[in-house]
Length: 227
Ligand code: CTP
Ligand code: MG
Image (cartoon, rainbow, N blue to C red):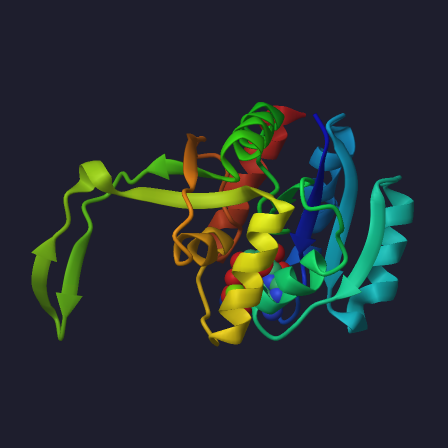
């Protein structure tokens, strides 16, 4: 089975406090965004990587693509202010309603190919599938420092990327979100709000999004293990 992946990489990485886009931080001497692209470079099912970047970082990213021998990057396009706008810009460059498109954060360099394949299979059956893990902590709803409610953990999942879609499904979801000025925290939420089913594939806890400094240590130890 074949798919294309859109990798949003146009963020500022504010929570990391690195002073610039966190995706350029080296882990085991290789920039985070290169680790992420390499997974798709190696996956035979992936026929194109669409990279969404900040225009100011174009030269640097093109240099890394060359240095690390990434051959599948078909397009490098400019992102927007919000992640959702960056993904939308990527989607606009893809054609073919029946195509399977994955959306995967540049900041998740630990995703595994078997999980990617499960997503692709499920998305071609159902239209939309996302990776997630059961929540480990107890989650409470809090208002003004007071607990309002403890939410039944059995029903809670932490959602990751990749998120996989039939192109027609995710394109119309993004178009309608844009029309309604709706900003979601992930791509699947845009599909949910138009009443479409989203399947969950159980992934693992290693597929973290590198967001704050602590995440770097965990990612480094996992990548070391992989080597
Ligand atoms: N992203 C993007 N365009 C944006 C914002 C984010 O392409 N306008 C990308 C990031 O580069 C990252 C992914 O979306 O690969 C997930 O976003 P996040 O982890 O929040 O990264 P940042 O937005 O860069 O970090 P922060 O929120 O801490 O500023
Ligand atoms: Mg962000």
